[in-house]
Length: 362
Figure (cartoon, rainbow, N blue to C red):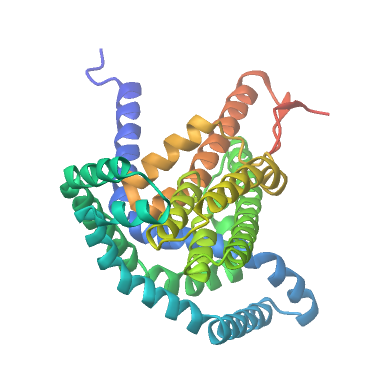
């Protein structure tokens, strides 16, 4: 009679290794996030690099040309547009303490009420509400400032990501081959190869779709806010385009920020601005995004919301952005694993291709 159950020992050992792996991922999450963004950046550059590689007969030359063109484009952008954005941003930053003081003291209620013809009773109610929640407003502003400072501390990722992406662009295929060679079993290698192929397709499509949606939002926000003569239109339009990268939460925060700044800066046509923000959100979510993003993520809205909230708790703003592709990757692994177990039981009856349900093998 054996004292130690070998099967139970293997299960416990596997669970321990899994727990240690999760612990390592959590501890090193900030470093891993930098590498994940580098992978995303590499996916974004991959089509251009692959096309130039054939013309220049060398992947290293293609990468060098692409990076040179990218630096030139960024230089031209900051030369022509950067000073104006910086000037508007500095003016907005200087006016924020005054605006916060007006909000916490309730004076902003009288100012807005007089500009929009509100009754004295309504003005007093608004002022009383702001005074009653003065401490909450101050804490919220401090919390926002701390979050902004935390994001600023992570700015090093922006500089590190393109450098790390060079290695993924140059040797990404080799990394994948080495990873696959670690698996000796043919069924397990097929499973891993399928997961990698599906994730490659999903991530490439997701990154390019997100960039397209963000660029389109930046263009529409900037043009429309400029036509309406909204204060700090260029800064707000740029912020709206950047926040489009953050799933679910980003567009809502962008709309709230644009409307709040406009109202606090005594903008007269805020109703027209509110209607525009609502219409654009509907167009972006139900017309543009389905055509650009397609069905590639295959995530239920509840799963997306859970991923966004969990990502924010784990890694802040970066975690929110990474939540959707991570959740989609987990779905890919689950579906591939289900197919793998089905093959082990019944043989190679089915095949699964990313972007569709499990189809009978032809």
